[in-house]
Length: 229
Ligand SMILES: [Zn+2]
View 1: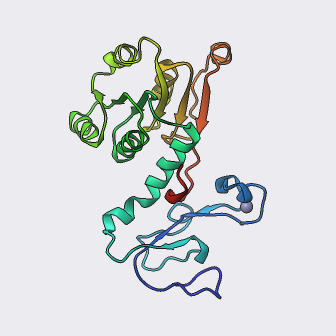
View 2: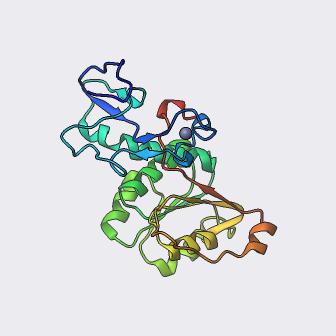
View 3: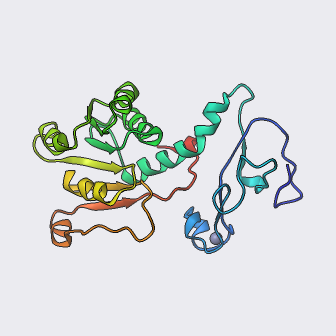
């Protein structure tokens, strides 16, 4: 495989690639905030990706995988890494109530991540009954398919407080607004779903300040899963 660092040869085989390519030396790159690098590129987004016949990637972003790893697992590695990063930025931990809005493939990874760290209860908001069922199989305690019942369900299962963490995993302004309504005082919203450019939501700044709420902006960057703590 050709690389941007021509002196390094990567052996053929099963590999995963960190798609986020920064300059490697700027303020942001040195803090693993690659997407804030002014030279950042994303393989598969700003240039050809894995569906192309040949892909060029920096050798230091190519990670060999065990030869018996299923390709389905390899395909999920990058999205899972984003989910791990979001969990770390949210400081999601044991005993926290977590709401995941949206139970698509990524939403269900959030559910599994929440289960892995011992969060409880894990409540999923998903209008598709099939996806809601998958979320429960993935580890959700409760799946709400009727949006009109979501707030009541969250309050009922958090002693009336609201959730410690709400993860928006759809990318719709209305759902981001809903996320802010669902958190408890002092809780936080994890932004994950990709909205259209320019989308915005009104934010009650006074209440956000007084209640010490916070917003954790997930950067869609690679985090090595093995560094998860
Ligand atoms: Zn940089």
